Length: 347
Image (cartoon, rainbow, N blue to C red):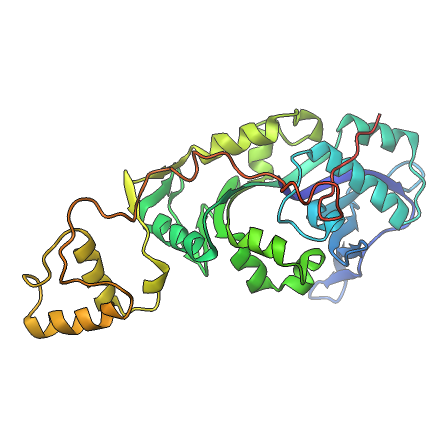
């Protein structure tokens, strides 16, 4: 799905649209440059989009031909971004109509034609897919395991911040992040950031199972790939680009996911558990006193380290079992309701 768009939208208007401005004075107190600030516009869900007049170009009649737009069109139109569409061009057209109505601007024939043709310059596009696991704790455990077992070609190991795993976070070209959608909506606040699903248990349960892998595509990469124009994004382009970048994510042959019940255990007990799962006889590893102390603590979690394990641990996950599965789409119960906004097909 499309999760973010920055673009220069053809949008002829006579007065600057901005949320204020900045004036820079030199050491003599004279104005060296001025800059307009973004203005937030809101839809019916009270979710916002940032816009500002692009002052780098003007028409012969002193009107401004472009509006710089930055934000999440999915969240703007449906009040949440648990799911959405891959129709980048459709979202851009919908944004154009929404902004014309918001600012009471009559579309010019030229602007309308440019938008319809996809002659819209892209500065950033975020795309993602969702994979369902059994629960939020399992999603978080998968991400922690990936922190130690995964690497991205030309990006190396991931960097964990909070519960999100980043690859190439500060790259000027593209980056990838992996997170649990259920955890994210809790951390950021459902009522403010996802108002359309606030108080609805079914979407929140859906989000708790959602392992999301997202690619942030920035202007340099878009230009190199000839994808900096909306018109160049064909019907399957979002899926093709997504899979191409996802294939750069490499895992060790196996990666071990720790049970959620062990999350709060001290490091020493986690180490003992890991050795036990690998088949070691912990009586040969620890002193009797330490062994029975650890056994007592782990029995509280239903784990008896006095019974030696045989063979491969049952919590070892084949390298990309989850990611080889088909990503989950829009749930059937959301289609045809206000919980799913599908861009219209304009002639």
